[in-house]
Image (cartoon, rainbow, N blue to C red; front, side, top):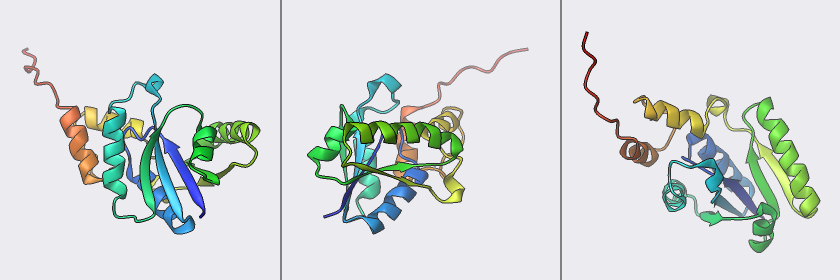
Length: 167
């Protein structure tokens, strides 16, 4: 069984992430979307919230599952008996960082391959950070995330009601 791990913080999951997952599901027998603990990033959503959002988004894909991991990715890949790590590339700037990670993972375990996938061109500008910023400022993130993620963002980022400034 060909298994691929698609790791990330997914804070929150975007349509760009989903695009990569859906295309990977056609190439691999099993895809695990692995939500990283990584508290160093100070995520908006808790690990369990991010896992629930991912599970909801991939439930229609029979060969895709969601899980969490903490620690070295290559160890998680071995534990899950996977053959590849999937990484999304949006732009050249992503490539440099991802290339370094791929080389380091190969150094740690030469049996684990890294496969880079590009999302549809309509998602190349999209990042979780940008989505959170738009949502924080009260913008519409509907085109960028699944409906349940948009609802979770709205609930999490309820705008504080400040009185209007007086002249």
